[in-house]
Image 1: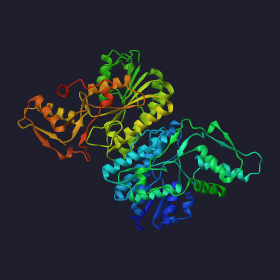
Image 2 (image 1 turned 90 degrees about the horizontal axis):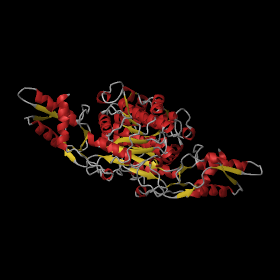
Image 3 (image 1 turned 135 degrees about the horizontal axis):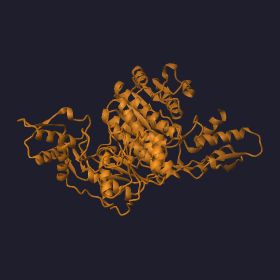
Image 4 (image 1 turned 90 degrees about the vertical axis):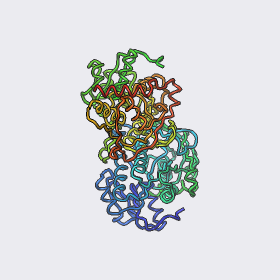
Length: 320
Length: 320
């Protein structure tokens, strides 16, 4: 899959210290890449901070057009993984406005800087399954867009903006729409991270009654291990077709209940499941499933099976 | 077509003093409506200012959430035609950011105010053919979105935002994607308005050589007379299906050259056509054509034929 990858590439990963970004750095280093630059919002660089020299770590507010341009001028990337976005899905009006405004600015800042500085760079623009109108069968790339929350709206805006730059300025952009992913270093608030934390904490405690608080167990999600997601991103960067959108997801759904049972079984404990209405979202989609045939045709399929991916996730939360 | 229209409706038209808005006011008055309120950006109310009492004219910056909410609370609309948007398609980065930011704010302001004040109001959210990825055959509502300019991106964002409010808050929203329209009172910069102005000016002058400066004559556009557009909006308001998108366009294309020839023929003058490269756009789509079968099924078809619509447009520019 990496036949066309050159180790001479200068790679920029915006949002590269985040969850998927950090696994992408792991993978690119394993593949022998050296010229990997990442931006981070603020100076907290976490896992990636230990892997890359400080000259390749760039704390940067990407909404600052001038500084973004200066960074691109100084490193001249040939590949840009655009993973940066404000991910909080707020419910107040001010947060809705902010998530759209900031994600618009981030995208526009990178697109305009690339147009000026490195118009031939290959860019992978990361989108989300949340851009689609929900439906109960597998989502294809040609299905209707129609997000049900402001974060999804902001990701459609990012994608459309990148598409317009691809068309107007001939930028070499490939698009993902990524489905749910999980694994080590995911921020709290996501269901598998949350379950894993609770289960590993329970396994450390010696109290008698062990309970785990959960939300909607009936939701079915297309869950992909983050290291498989990172492999898909490298594949799309190197072999995705310019201007095309690719679903990135396993093509299989599990109910939240099945995942929880698998996690509990992996630790072999007796844990009581307590449904907490407060953990339900105001609007929840019953099924999210990727039709990943377009990505599969490039040669991708998940390598890590769900049980071993969940075990590695649990182990991470056990130790951190 | 107006069987379900009630004259007891309280109608708000945001952007109601603009081009399509002013023809919509004309039509609603003809239909016998009295409770028609319009917002205008600034105090210039033009044609509509002469039709409605000042108590129904509301100069308002719709990006002001609090004032938008106050207006809705004072008039309690049962129908909202959301025509307001910044329409300038700028090319500088600051303008791109601004058109997206302002159109996001306008839409969000109206949606949040409606959610709070009149959650049962029927809302018609006006979109554009520029939201689609261009193609050379008729565009269907299920075709892929992919604007090639920032204005188109901002209109996708408006539509997605309204869709998310429809889904999250159950707002009763219908969506248009409107194709090119023309007629009396259109602002300069649009091709038919521009041609009409030049031709009527030439007919007033007594100079020997008469020349008209034109841009790309080969572009084919789906051109609908604005009064037929207004009829479509009233039909969608009253009979459109909640949550559905409707193309609004004639379903016929004319080349810009054909339109120009028709306009010249209507005045019976000898006019020399001079192609001016400066009038070409940086990116121009060869064909834009609506598949209007979804709207047709509600009973709409253009009533005014192209020649008489062009004549009325010419007459307007002759006298104004």
